[in-house]
Length: 149
Image (cartoon, rainbow, N blue to C red):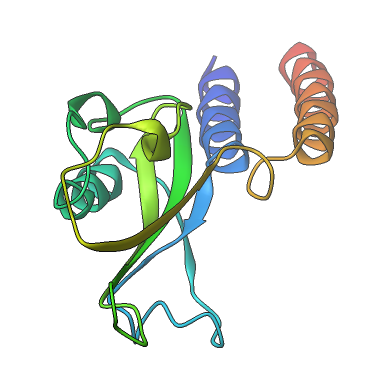
């Protein structure tokens, strides 16, 4: 019985980490500079909320993109005012759900807002999910043998 509980706990931890969406996370033009390596973090409700609060400067109706979810999207947003040579706003992070924040209505602003939102194209692509499914199947088979012995 104890072996079953340990196996189930280890499997659930492994499964959640294997399927976690990882996105670059940075706030600010200097920190999000594309010429440097930006660390990736597993998306959580807290990271999604932080990102959405920052994006609410430009986007309306973002409440559906906050909170804990089983699915997250990566989002990258830059803003450059008209006449400026460089961006004055940059954020990379997570939003809750698989719908794109970029399609939401925006407030009026005088400049160029660029937005890129993705789910799966770089973080959890099909090859990675297929590989994860194979690993999970192997873990279940091995676990069954361990429990049976």
